[in-house]
Amino acid sequence: MGQKTNPIGNRLGIIKGWDSNWFGGKDFAEKVVEDERIRVYLQARVQKGGIAKMIIERTLKRITVTIHTSRPGIIIGKGGTEVDRIKEELKKLTGKERKHGYHNTEFRACLPAAADVRCLGIKIRPLAII
Image: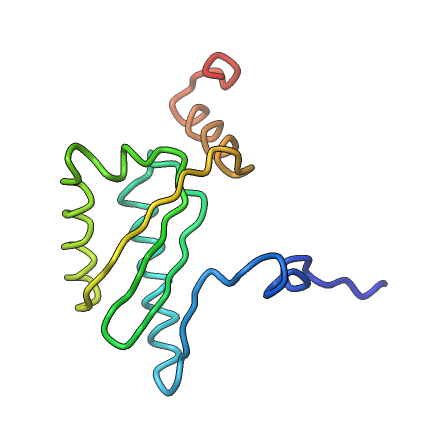
């Protein structure tokens, strides 16, 4: 057997960055669990938003969540009302102030695959949509 490494591990810090940027300290485990809770919550809250990637950055009092999405209009909502709701819900979830950023990513491989899975879930032919 050859010794194979994960290709993402080879690229970290050179081509690709980390998904969470913060220093753990003594409460490292709590922050990892909180990051996972934020990711699961946002994926469940905005299922049709086409979320490709979330980057979480922490400072002492603020958490910045950057969402890479193919449909920013669904996440932002009319006049930014949906963003304000998400901010309030995340503030209740963690108790810290949040700042959000959105990036448009239409050419990620996971987005067409997620659309196909969604189509199969409601029994529509995937090729009919594309």
